[in-house]
Length: 230
Length: 197
Image (cartoon, rainbow over all chains, first blue to last red; front, side):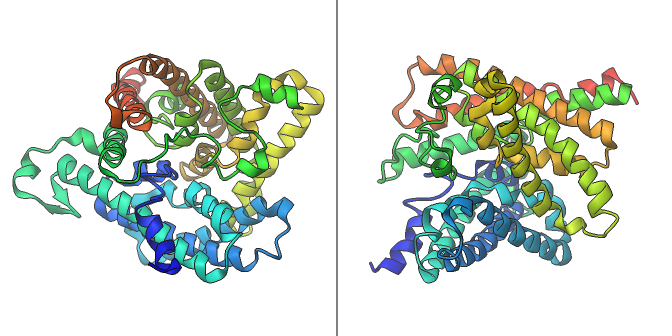
């Protein structure tokens, strides 16, 4: 497999941003109540990710290292605003369904994380491919979760009722606890059946987009230890 | 007065930011392992939420809205919050070192916490006035605090129990979060019946 294909595929399976890297949990849990919402969210995030990765990669030699995080945030916020306006104009129903989570793509760790981990080290083409792979991986994970939650929780698939399940749906799955539960089950399934043994994800600094700027080795360490370093 | 109580209580219990709106999940899962770090993080979140609302609300009402710049909301808010967090950190370090010692490490992490940006945007969307917006921010922060502290207790119990191999780590934490969230579901409807409007 050549490098381009590898860059694309790794985002979908091996480094799936949601199920393996466990980034962007908030939109995953919140918008996976129905398949349509999940696909809308996935598409919106993918567009933002693609644009931001391309631009950040193109500007990687121009942006001074010290102020790169604020620069990235401004760029990402700009693209999010554009996507927000487009969705409002052309898909007002989706805008209503996604609500607050659409502007919150700005603080989605996946986008800042890819900018920090990939786009500022690689050329424009590789970054675009990486963004596409990650975007598809994110959308796919959202789609899986939304399918489980909508089919069993609401008895429908993308709004179309399913014969037996529609009368016997488990509505708790579409509510908040169901989101946590299905997400937990999916990650457990990936742990069990994935050939890629995911490292014990500790929510430490390795996945945190601010790891470089924050200078600590672990977020778990308490105030005491950091205070000593001051 | 009743209105404030209703806003406060619904922000804490019914629309709990973590457990029913899914905002701020990363710190919720990441920092809730120990009680003292959970408390420190949530106090910092309450503090920043109040400051952020106090700063962004006037900007929206007096700067963006009259000039028809409402579409700049997202960009302006995230920048204001990021700058504010930096400023607060510098001021605390210089004048209140004791507070900086307990909250300082969590402050930089909060900049990209979606709960903070979420609360400022929701305050505008819900059409609250300034006092209501501040009460809502306080309630949201307290709700975050409650969820963090409760969940750190739940997690300390999980630590020592016998868990199937593939459920170790995150899956069991999420399952526990589901049960904690289930308990908060019980609050829905309580507030409306307590204070009929």
